[in-house]
Image (cartoon, rainbow, N blue to C red; front, side, top):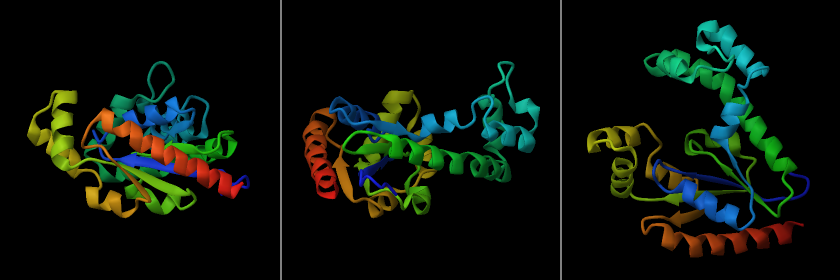
Amino acid sequence: MNARHHPVIALTGGIASGKSTVERCFTDLGIHVYDADQAAREVVEPGTDGLEQIIEAFGPEVIGEDGRLDRPAMRQRIFADRDARHTLESIVHPRVRQRLQQLALADTGPYCLLAIPLLAEHIGHYRWVDRVLVVDADEATQVERLIARDGIDEALARRILANQATREQRLAVADDVIDNRGGAIALEPQVAALHERYLALAAHDR
């Protein structure tokens, strides 16, 4: 994928697994982390062909007064309509992958990370990354964190988890795993060790 042999690491994990904390740890080490959710917003900004295709598919009613995608209206539209959701994903997802690939190619660090929450669900489209790093936490820990973070009840927390890839599916695609059952203090040494591993990979491929 990259003529510079610049390692590209895909970072993923289930909801409330601690991905954001891990991202910050790598950022603190001077490594760039490019976020798929941010890319998804960029590829449907006003003036993009992504937004034009959404208007063609769903009509102007999904555009707000500011000319941007009305996300609440779009969520309502696709919530109970699987075909509409697939249509939206077929517009947004390829553009997100292209954007992430562009960012990775342009990155000037020794390696970079791509934060992709739904990586396990779409792993076939990311064969070009060099390694997959999974932030892992057991379901009980995720449920506990979701309840505390979002103020929801356990039943809703478990329904949210049920709509994602399973822990086993994520671990099956992992090259590297960070165990985040112990909280933030236990993360830093794990990140530091992986940072050294990725720097060694970058030096080897140079």
